[in-house]
Length: 274
Image 1 (cartoon, rainbow, N blue to C red):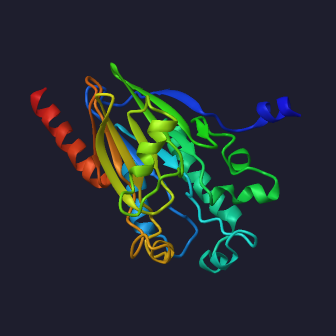
Image 2 (cartoon, helix red, strand yellow):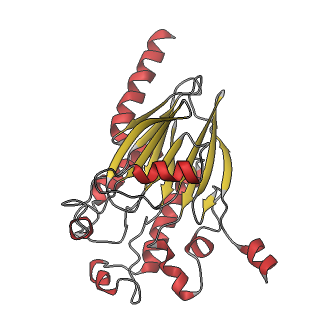
């Protein structure tokens, strides 16, 4: 039974992906998608679809997801939330699967990780990953993990999990540092989600630059943050991690559209020089 479980389980702890952008001499951009809560009436779909289209249509853009992509309230999982979801958990999952499969088929989806809302499926004896993500080509982290991204002559390591201990209302990226210190000290970037707060921080560990990211949310009208004493409302997510192909250098953009404008400017300069 143990061997069968390991063979059939969808999920891993480490993975390596190679990025092959349309313009290999220019930076690549990774859209960090988490807590979109698709299916909820509280989600800002205009913001989500704007960011999704930027990722899907812009050269050198990729995506990593970090859980709670759907709202997925059930009768035994925060049942009062059902009244905020006009479509069923199955319909939410099918919608997400279609959106992500388009990115996956275009080799833009680098990895997907778990979320506590996704994990509500475990109450029925099935995993979200096994039921809905089994056909994906990209790595699936069912309990977080380490993603190595190879780009040009460089290698970047991203540690990601939906949540980790050490979360602070005054210092949201504190949990990022704890995940780095205790689990993946070799990571260049630590990416967390869950609390609907948005922050990124550059810091030094062992003389190496590290970046901590808390990804925010697209569920902007939810009262979760206010009731938890975290903030007045959710902070719009969708940060973008920029990676250079020729030297170890990273930058964080607040939104995909900003990174897209920068990419467009670089393409114009490239055309002028050619």
